[in-house]
Amino acid sequence: MAAAAGIGEDDDDAPIAGVPAFLEDYSATIPASLTARASLTAPAGPQAEPHPKSLECPICLEVTDCAQHQCREGHTFCAGCDARLVFPRRCPACRMALGALDQAIRNRSHEERIAVLPAACAHCGLPTTRGELGRHELGCPQRPRSCAAAEAGCTWSGMVADKAAHE
Image (cartoon, rainbow, N blue to C red; front, top):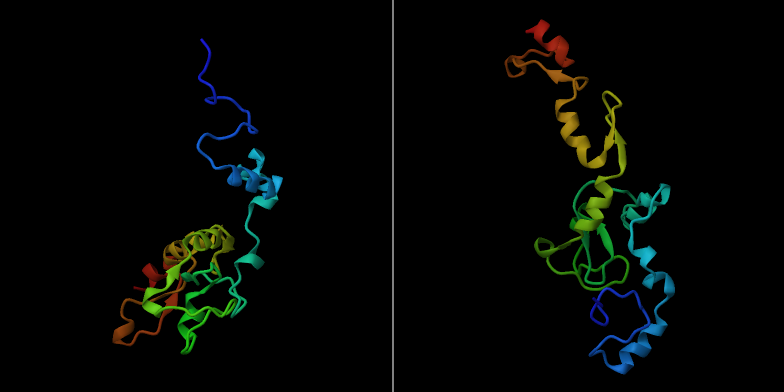
């Protein structure tokens, strides 16, 4: 049984029904690298990781773990720098007027790319990602802790394993 015309076929040069001719001509101006099917799949290997330079805030030049904001043109900057912009608030890249800070546009895909960057615990050196680092450090066995009686004046601080022996 033959398949219906146009369904399941891999003929990329066939015209699409209902598309005006001027749009078909426009498709010739799109670079082949953007239309190739191979470019739609995720790259494998080292180039798959986001480049930290492309994730830097253009104001503070840091890759921050805080929320990432963007202008209506898609230029991204960290929320900390956005909060320090003075009136009239403008995008640092294109100078487009920004709305009120409480209505900032979040760039969640940028935040996700930052969250998968490699990181290590400052206390035990465990390799992890930036997104998981905060959760790990809260329960890290090497993180210094204060005594439960610190409010009463005890100045002891040390590792969790030593805390039980102190108390």
